[in-house]
Length: 309
View (cartoon, helix red, strand yellow):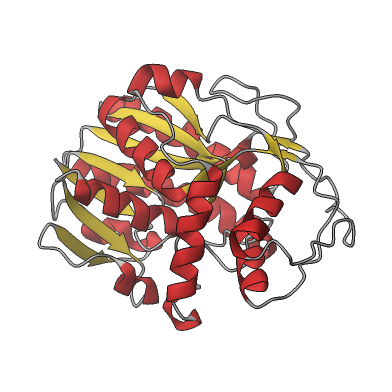
């Protein structure tokens, strides 16, 4: 099959491209013009790289074809940009542009990538039917993008699936995430300063996110919303300790040094029952296995290898 992937230089985008390539698919990788991350996309005659900004998808309409269209591109995903409502709502507008592009390329299905931020504060595991109450500009825009693109896909006759990715980590993760902060600090022999880390969390390795996305693209049911996580809940303190132990068990972890963020999400776990039933997806990597792979990657790459655009 031929897959189109926007946001191709993101951690998830690269993982999806690598997995799809391993499965024998052709890929159109759509990336921001001049992105340093283009160099991270594997070299293959099965991959076509197209440089196009998220705001300019109209210029690509009708110029190619694909079977499945995966929309991952999104501007300002860092904490500092998540409440920039003007940018976030423009992102939601651009999802509509992506749907129109997918239709012009004769895609049979559109798979949009949303976020756990659409739920707002949770007290139990979240599935596709869990009520949403987003509190950040990012979460509000993602929810809006999902509802609007679902409507347009119905009108255009394309199968539609929306995903809500929980806490993911892995190769090419952003420097500002907790996992990458921990890895870099610990590799430098530093003592990370942390909150009490009492949160109950669901972390999923990026390779498993890619496997879930491709399974949804192949077998997801029209109109479904699928949370993507490991389905396992553990305390953040346990995750942090696993990261430390994979690098140097003797380094001290300073829990309780920092305060929680205001409105800190204390429970964040995905219910993947429906995802597994519909697509057959089950996580392949445990957290410890994923961390070993991630740490190995960071050890072998210099800072210059990581993109921040």
